[in-house]
Length: 577
Image (cartoon, rainbow, N blue to C red; front, top):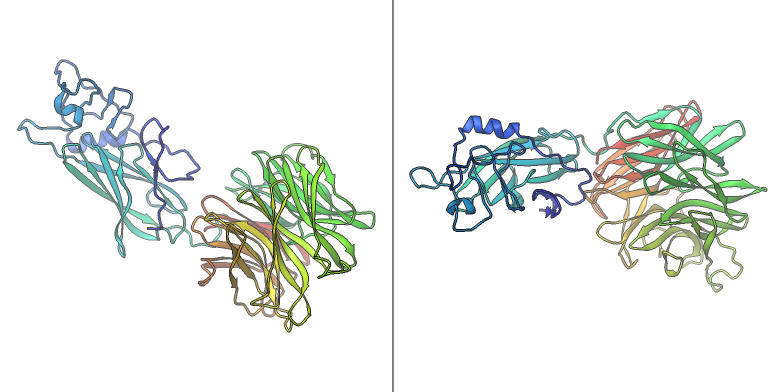
């Protein structure tokens, strides 16, 4: 079934175990008291190998009897000792077969251990099996009322643990009581089985993992988030006596609270969803923040390196009359995305490749429409988002163009570059569903390709709707999804979780209120929203969810700003998948 990733054998572990791919934490071994209890309950025998003068080796390190690949045997108390010597010596001992005094094959008694049980949060479940004598393979099944036995793993080599599977949300494998069944098979054909009940009761998607971080004070809002370690690095803006400054802070993933002192980076000219400051991580201890700063009556982009707990790093600036709305990191290179001002309300989309060591601009690309479309270069193009997809740089934004009636409209623009800046392709939305649309964010998909979100609207209406479009790995445009709402809405960031759901964050104008932060998950191009969260700040003012990071287990870290007593305040929350 699609609910479970097939396990694979990990050859470099000391004992053969089956582990789900992408398991991020090491799996702890089960301990010996389980096996000792089993022996007390089932009356372990005193069988030994062919020589009765030599006592059987025993091990209390594991509840599983496991053949030692190094040539010795490791057995639980009362189990037959295996040898790797002459196959004629020790007869049945070398094959794992075991007979009683009457010459008949001994039964295989099985005991099953689940950790944790019950399951109350997203994460791995370890399945360990104890047997009364050596076995060759073990099958593990999950029993669901509607599906019957679903195989988790077949033909598993005895190990510690035998299998690990993942609970990714309340939907997979599903809340409620389940049964895990283990069937162990010995070399002589004898088998045994055991089962244990497993209660799964995790929080529904969209509910808070911990109380949200919401604090009135100098940090007025968060605008971007990126995963690092157990938590997120966040960029935002900070109110000072001299105006707003860009700020960076690390938020702990367990408590939801900022760690250490926020790092002030420099004055900010513009802020908010799709406008920055934007953050990207590099390595285990470094982040880079890009923002738009005031400069000589105009603006210019700025980038700063941040190592939390250390002094502020260097700040590098771009050309005059430029802006930065997004940033990505590839090895030792930063990709800054924004625009260059050409005239009042007119820009050319700009992409800069910047050295992460020196701040030197290594390469730059500008999108300008062909002269036949824009003879005087008087139309507006702005970059809003960037992602690394299959060793390509994918930039999304918006551009002015004309429709079939020769009316000026805004349309989503997608640009693809090589990692070093070679132009690969460009695509402009045909506006097949709505008169106008704009790309505000882009994210890669694990199955290949990428997805873009932003907004769309018709010319006769001022109301915007969240519009999301899927692209193939070759950059070909695919299905389009529009969120049905009765109010103005925008998407500022998105990401894919472990189940393939798409999480989108932005803002939603609700009836008789101002804009509120909007976070929701969709199953794909079609289907109702799986869950959604609307955050309405306690005071009047626009609230928005501006940044998103999705971790390996599917948890969504959402950051943004909301108003309280006419003052913006930052918020950060972590949601169940």
